[in-house]
Amino acid sequence: MSSRIIRPQGAPIALDWRLGIRDGVYKIEDLAIDGVSMALAQHSEIGALIARDGGQVAMLLSAMR
Image 1 (cartoon, rainbow, N blue to C red):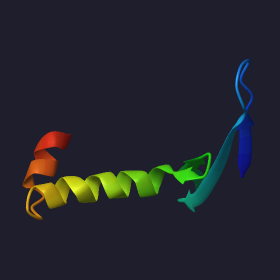
Image 2: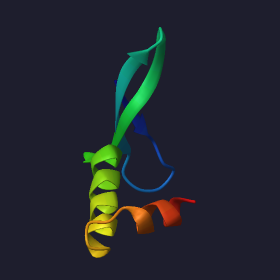
Image 3: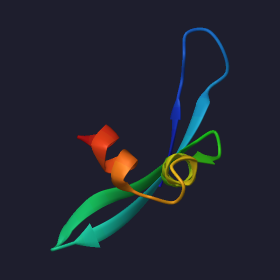
Image 4: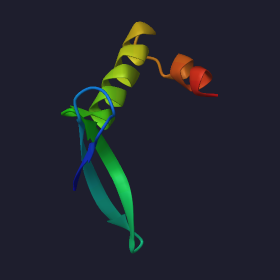
């Protein structure tokens, strides 16, 4: 599914929605803004946090709490 945000000033912003169905209900699985996947960006950020702590997830879990 695709959408566009029309702004009063500036270029429109393209949104691409990836939907999945779980228990008979549609859920947003990913949102790409101007071609940048939010899921992939989060995945990369979490991977970098874990790598910074020597591959341990304890620091990540602590930060999430």
